[in-house]
Length: 88
Image 1 (cartoon, one colour):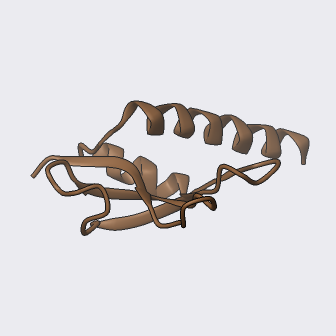
Image 2 (tube, rainbow, N blue to C red):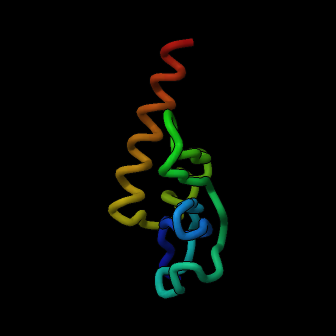
């Protein structure tokens, strides 16, 4: 069972909202997911991505591969978390 970390769309036509999910690679875009690990709201200001980085690390250790888009978003979320820790 090959797993991917990817986005699934749950928003309406002009109000995009995505869930970050771990799903089987061959399942449909909006099909059944193994686990929801975050959200992405592209129209919000500030921090549009909300990820549970502990679960991301867990699934990466189990062999899940992120899509190219999610790989970039995970990197941004890690940088934002590191900046938040450094600021406090």
